[in-house]
Amino acid sequence: MLPSVMAVFAILSCTSGETPAVQVTLTDKWLQYVKHVGAGWVQDMLEHITFPDISGDVDILIGHVDYTLSGIRITKCDLPEPVVEFYQQPTGLKTSIVGLSAALVGGWSTRFGLIHDGGSFDMAILSVSLTSVVQLGRDPEG
Image (cartoon, rainbow, N blue to C red; front, top):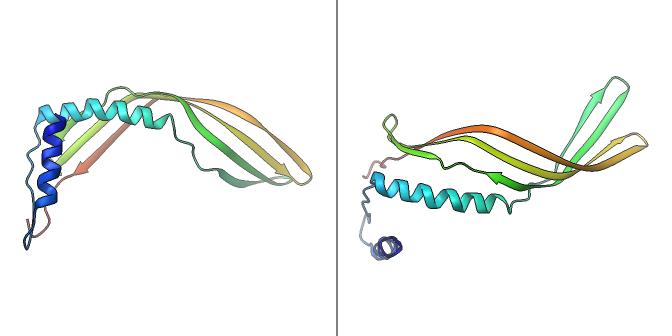
């Protein structure tokens, strides 16, 4: 499969003219292959992400509390194989993932006047379902 992908990229780099283009036909077999390879790649990448810090404040009856969540990272991710299919309205691809679970760790700190506190947290997110639709189409020039 890799040689055919490299051939497509070679053709793309050689196109020229007033309106260069390459037409590619997506088959269900190709779609299932990309789904399988892509799911493994995404799962590997998710375990190397560190999220940006989250800061905010909350007003309570007796004052104002500032908080920060920092160093949030994914320690484990169970990414079930997605369902990828052609979607008719609008024309495109529909991807669904059911049963996504992740474990996160990070640090927290709060400030309430002269009182400061902080620590670490472990969090589990269980049974998340995601659906996305990517629309494929043509511009006015084809």
